[in-house]
Every structure is written in structure tokens, then in C-alpha cells.
Amino acid sequence: MSDMNAEETGSAGAGAGEGGTTAGLLAEMLRNSRLAAFSLAVIIFIIAASFAAPLYMPYDPNKPSLSERFAPPSASHWAGCDDLGRDQFTRLVYGARISIMIGLVPTSLSIILGTALGLVSGFAGGRTDFFIMRLADVVLAFPSLLLAMVVSYTLGGGVTSIFAALAFVGWAATARVIRAQTMSLKEKEFVESARSVGVRESVIMLRHILPNCIPNIIVLFTLNIPEAILNESALSFLGVGASPPSASWGLMVYRYKTYLMSYPWLAAAPGAAILIFVLAFNFLGDGVRDTLDPYMKD
Amino acid sequence: MARYILKRVVISVPVLLGVALVLFLLLNVVPGDPITIMMGEHIKPALVESFRARMHLDDPVLVRFVRYITGALRWDFGVSYKLEREVSDLIRESLPHTIKLTVCAALVSWLIGIPAGIVSAVRHNTLADRFFMGFSLLGISLPIFWAGLLMQYVFAFRLQWLPVTGYYSLRYYIMPALVLGWSSAGAIARLTRSNLLETMKHDYIRTARAKGLKETAVVTAHALKNAMLPVVTVMAIQVAGLLGGAVMTESIFGIPGLGRVAVNAIADRDMPLLQGTILFTTGIVIAGNLAADIICAFLDPRIRVE
Image 1 (tube, rainbow over the protein chains, first blue to last red):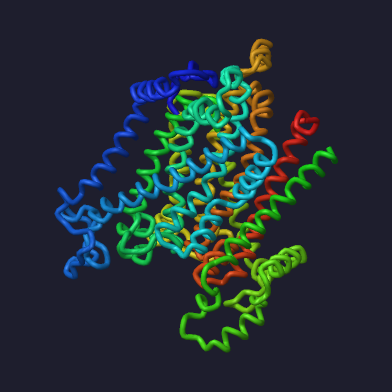
Image 2: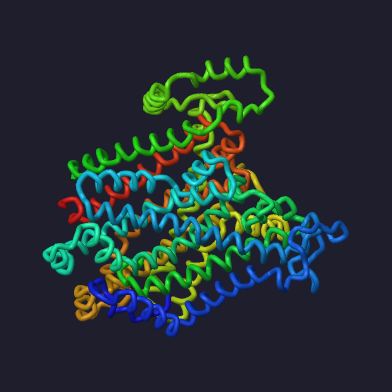
């Protein structure tokens, strides 16, 4: 988005001290881009607010109150009350925890899996590479939402199966990027020099090549989080996702769409929460990508 | 050129086979008996047995896999458990709705995305650029189902300009196509912008400017042609996104397309129907990618020579 000067990163930067400069570049990006900094602040605020919720929230997210069923938004109930009279704003704040988990857990899984397979594929080459990459082709051929639907159907629904489904769908793109990076890195002089002094292949892979993939991994990670959150909300909305009582935002939209015509705020508020959260991650991800990898811009 | 096309086609075949295999493994190695899950616990064992026999579920896995693959090649995806009808017939009935929806949505996304990308690139770093890029990111970040519900509330219920749900005329497709198209316009706009910005740095653009061409001519006649190549590729990748998004739009707007059939199949635990619709949809995506490769080769000789 904003025009960040990232020329000096380049694709070079092979060698020591990479971790330090990556962190330094990111800090500089946050100083220069108000949008990215603001987005990060929003994300941190939402996370902190949801985990500290029991400390300051006056309502219990699961306690029904029949006299307040479908209460419209007001000073005491900022987002109104749902069909059981539960305060919806409280439920939204608590629901953020699930969205954060959905954003982080499957994304971490798919990044770890994708990085491992990409590294091995690019480093080993030959038959291993062929096999892993053909599997990636197959996974990438599916529309991701449909594949996630099938996987969570197979695993029987629930939060764990959503995690597994999203990780299964997400690893392939990461593997492709990391493989390409590994293949170009393993031709570099520093790998050759390590090999010439007798460093073991596995050590070269983990200590010399992997650290140089970290900027790519960070970029992929930040950009995958919003996608995972959107996919989970879609799965929940279609009724194949998380199940109550742990209501994610997507599930809340799904539940309250029945009341759309009479109580529109019930479905509108959780959807707006998804949008704000995902938008913040996307703005931040854009900044991170422009900073760490000017060549990965789509 | 013919060799290039042939090579591409040959490469797509194993991918399609792999898709069929992954799908088969995911759906047929489910723990628990699919029939008991579908019919409920309290069903007479004899009934389950006769159903299993009728659906050939007691055959070894390998036999079933071969039957499924050879069947799919003959356009036979088996029989739906729930509806007791040929899956291929159900696909044939729902496909036109999905095509109508995705084509309309694709048109919307190109009409919004390409001009927005061009303006953003030409007016790089201006207010217009920021506006369109913000708008694009909003489209990418938008939960499709939620946008659909809001539109239903505003345009159908409050303003009463458009029908809420249905599929009887083009009017019914306006809202679903807008919702689905906007979400994919974002990606198109961002890609058009970054490619055009990249192309504008080339020497031949400077030459075109130096010989006194107007900026519009430089952009349209020289830069755009070269910048649009990756956009063609994205149009193909877009097919996957649109078909995925169609699952949600069809559910919200009551369009009986492929996506809705798949969602219903999940709800009914109707394995053959789910398997057939997903395999067919993914087949379309693979065909779309193939088409994009071929179109790119037509447009860019460097690709087909390599």
C-alpha cells in the first residue's frame, strides 16, 4: 500500500545477522507506515481486550436473560441482545479469542508443514521433490473452501477438524515459495563454502538455508492469517465449522441470519468484527510484504 | 504451439487423477459406517445391508476406486444416497445456475478491477490510487456471506429495489454477482496496478514518451498490452475463487447451483453427491488453468518457445 523503501533488502542478504536486520526492517516499517502501525495497534487492542474481558465486562457471555431478548443496541447493550437475551457485545469480545486462535493455530501448522516440505523438496530435489510438488499441485487445484469443507466433513466437524482442514489447505502455497527460495539459495557461495569445510547436509539445510527463508516465512504467515479467518468464518456460516457453545464470529452470523429482517444488528455486528479484524491483518501483511520481499508483490 | 498445448494437457491429467484420489481417500476412509451415519442409529440392520449391497459398499476399496475413476470418465458419478438420483443429472441441472452466477460475477470483477488498477497505476501515490487500493483490500477482506446478507437487507428489504432470493431472471443475479464480483475485483485491481507500474519502468516506455506520444497512448498502446499478461493468468485462478465463493452466494441468495448442492450434500452426509460435485468443480478449475496457459502462450511467444 504505502510506498515503503525496501530496496536495500533485495533478495541478497545471504549471510550472518539476517534475523537482526529482519526485525530492524519491520520496526522501521512500523515507524514509516502509519497504516501498518495503526493496524497492528488495532490487532493488539482486540487481542488484549478479548483476553482481559472477564476483568472488565459487566455481563456473562453465556447467561440468558429472557426479559432482554432482542433488545436493540443501547447505552447498556452496545450491540443489542440476541435471541436468548445475551449481551451481544460481550459475546463479540469473547468470540475474538476464537478468531485469534483460528487465525494463529492452523496458520502456524500450515506454515511449519509447508516450510518443512518446501525445504526438503528444494534441497533434496529428484524424486522427493517431484512427489511433494505433485501433491502440492493437487492440493492447489481444489478451490480452497471446497477442500476445507471436505476435510472437515471427513473429520466430523468441530474446532480441531477446522484447524486440520485449514492447515491441510494452506501448506501447499507455502511449500512452493520456500522450495523456490531453497533452490536458489543452495546454489549460493555460502552454501558451497559450508559444504567445502565439511558441514553436514542437514546442518546446511537447517542452519544456513532456513534462516535465509525467514523473511519469506514471516510474509507468508501474516498474509495467511486473514485468509484462515475468512475461511473459518465461511465454513461456520455454511454450518460445517465450529460448533456452539464456542461461538466464533462466523457462527454468530450464521445463527442470526434468520433474524435479519427484524433484528439486522444481530448478524451485522459479528460480520463487521470479522471485516475489521481481517482488514487490519491485510493492511499489516501488505506492509510486511513490501518491506521484506519487494519481489513477492502480486 | 500444438506441442505446447499437448504438453500442457498431458501435465494436467495426473493432477486431475491426484485430485480424484485425494477426494476418494478423504471421503471413503471416513471412520464409521457412512450409511449408519446418514440414516441414524436406529435403523433396521437388514435395511442397511440391502442399501450397502445396492451401492456396492462392501467391495474392496481398490475395486471401488477403479469403479469410481472409470465411472467418472464416462460421466457417471454414481447415485445420490439421499435423492436416489444420478449425480451426473443433478450436476447437469445445477451447472447452468452456477455458470450464470460466476460469469456475471467475473464481468463485474473485470469491469471494476481492471479500470481501478489502471487508474491507480497511472495516478500512482495519489488520492485516487489510495482510494482504489483501499477499496480493493476491502473487497479481499470482506466476508462474502455477510456482504450478501447486508445487501439483502438494504436493497431487497428496506429499499425493495431487488428481489431477496431466487433465480428466475437476470434481476435476481444482480446482488449475488456484485457481492461475488467485488471480492474478486480486489485481486484483479491490485495485480493490474502492480504489473502496470512494473511495465512503465521499461526502456520502451521511455522511448514512446520521448518520441512525443501522449500519455494515454503510452499507457494503452504500449504498457497495457504487456501488463495484462499476468492478469489473464489471474482470471483463470479467479475461476477457483469464484466457484468457492459461489458456494456461499448460492446459499444466501437461494440459487440452486453446484455450490448449494455440495453444501446440501454435506448436511445430508450424501457422500457420492459430495464427491461428484467437488470432483466436477475442481475439474473446471483445472480446465480453467489449462485455458489460461494456452491463452498466455498465444499472447506471448516467449512462453511457447520455452
